[in-house]
Length: 90
Image 1: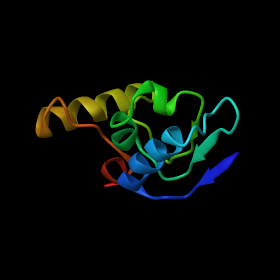
Image 2: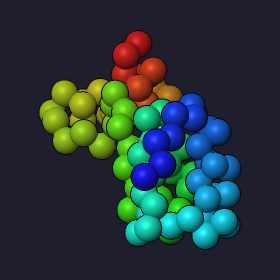
Image 3: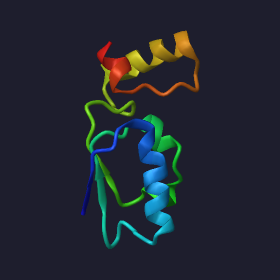
Image 4: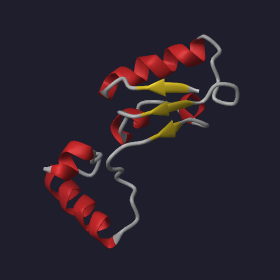
């Protein structure tokens, strides 16, 4: 297993380089400690499937409070925006 502590958008080229080098999660999974849904959206399913992410907050948490927060955030900043840990904490 690869324990990845790269922060933010640095995760995108890292994951792409792993796949280009033939490192696949079925043999060597990666756990990301600082990758949010913002970075994960920049990658294809092939680049992320089989890996793990541990993060303080994910937009897709299925709670009434989170759904209301995401709705308010998108109403103010745009439907395409993805919420992440810093936004939720603020």
